[in-house]
Length: 67
Image (cartoon, rainbow, N blue to C red; front, side, top):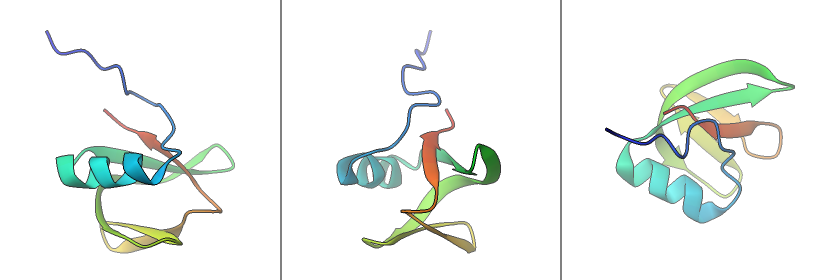
């Protein structure tokens, strides 16, 4: 049985984002507690995260493990 110990935990450090990208883990993106996007991370920069075709600013969004 698979444990979902990461489910809905917030990604806070750069290592969380890089690990999620390498493992192709789905990420949920929230702005003011409203879900605005989800999927695996396609690209990372110090200021933004690209999920699918959309780019989200790291300082304006909350990123959580969706699995």
